[in-house]
Amino acid sequence: MHAKLADQERAAKAKRKRLRQMSDEQRQAHEQWQKNHRSGSAAVRARRRAEIEQNRAARKTLECAGQSQPSAELQQIAEAIRRAEAEIRRRDNERRIAAGEGIFG
Image (tube, rainbow, N blue to C red):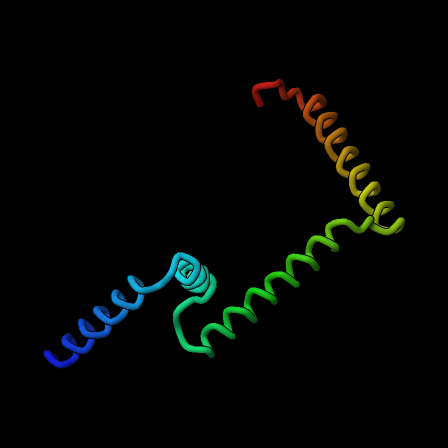
């Protein structure tokens, strides 16, 4: 365990030294690289890229699906449903009036 900690400390010291010796341009390039490259194995990064691409494709598909107009037949069915629901409400109101129900039930 002690050897592992010593190795980590040695690696950290070498990294600090490399960073101190970098020019401003090199340091900016290094910082940019760190922002763009996540840690982890190549397989994990590849899987994450694939997930991002699948999500992008799904969003595009859903956006396109939401923009399409319903067919004339679907519009007629929706209108028939609205008329039927209005008729049900009207008949229910007539039944309540005939039964003597007031606004308080």
